[in-house]
Image (spheres, protein in one colour):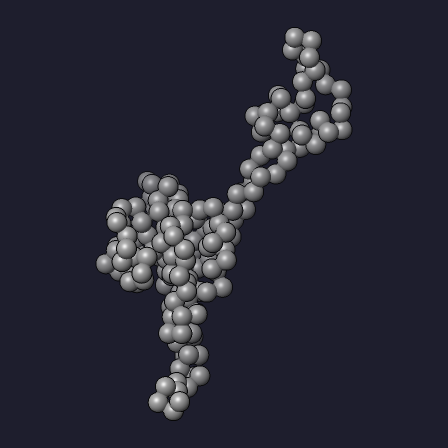
Length: 166
Ligand SMILES: [Zn+2]
């Protein structure tokens, strides 16, 4: 018992160092969540308002001519959340977690390191924009590759994730 005892203060110190590192060296990474919502035009057609659109004698629902949703009756809303992450582009800089060691190719892949609180957001987002400000390239989008991995001295204060360019 005594030989394996590590003072709690060591974990607290490491946690503080990780937080400092990510807040100082991390960048603002935008997490994007796509949500399917009913278009306003579909709400109109439920109310069965009389429309003026007739084709071959048939009455078409209002949303058939909607410019916003292209007649689908729903649209995709983007919800975004910004999270501080250290972003590693060069594979030589990556933290060597198992999913890194088993990668067949590192083409178009980046690694991020962020605080453990962000793990659910990482798992649920549809993609991230890691480089909104890279001149000449536009926003670079990446999709989560594999599962994010908790990391740290006790495995619970940071999360490491791999992302594939899309
Ligand atoms: Zn519509």
